[in-house]
Length: 81
Image (cartoon, rainbow, N blue to C red; front, side, top):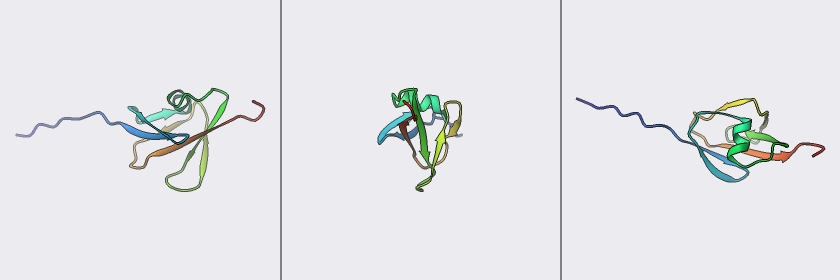
């Protein structure tokens, strides 16, 4: 007889060079700002899987953290702020 125990997953994310843990597989741009203490007037971008390509993430956009690589997020002030 086997007992299967499902443990909750934690997802490593890097925000502006600092490591954080998210218990949620899907996170929004707003959540990334909250985790990383990023002001609401900043833009968030993330690096696409070990490339030098970046995609901007709006507050309501969601990203899936459920793949093996650590997601890297960066912030910068919006133009005019």
